[in-house]
Image: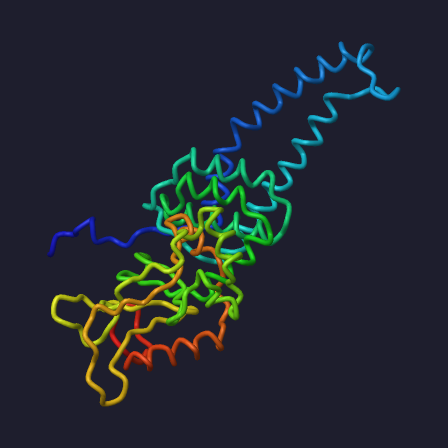
Length: 309
């Protein structure tokens, strides 16, 4: 009888939603004890100070004010956790998946305590779920940037994500994410018709989501099929689909490098793009096809591994 290899046994799985609950509960436990202790101290201080503190003739209840602030923060945190759980549905996760860094989860929950807008709560919830799913997927710097995001910035960034082309050697790896300006200069409002004016790009840059050089280029030679000598072909993702470049019609293939310009995301932007829904923008895709044809190229749908369909 062949010996059983324990390394090839199937990994037990649990619901991702259950793990999110367990992780957040473990982080909250010491915080709850700290809150109870602070509450008793502040309540006692309030009793002592009650006879001395008056504002516009009204007794200022320090304990109650503190409790109200804590309740608001806790409510926001609970809503973000609820959105994280709702967003994963019945997704499962292996029991061998390591727990995320407790400090990162604590930073996420602390920041979530100041987010009351539903659209932003969804982003925070998805970021939390993503960190539990893939520990290390969000950095401390990204969390600090996320704290500065308001509803307007979120809308502009979502537009950028919807227009972006993502170079993806591996399905969960992104080495470049940019919006191709298709022969124009983004710094001169070439992307303004698509909702990304110079002002909008500057806002994203100031918040650490987009690199300030809006007209930098990237070689798309690796996205060409069949591969050129010295290139490993992999696809780029756009509006939720994978594509490779091919020679247009019977024309001879141009020679790489294919220098395509456009504003690119920072590493923090790439991390946050994973939790933003890409909305189809057919007009931009049509224009992108026309741009590639002007370069004697066409785009063909492909599998994530790079093989054209």
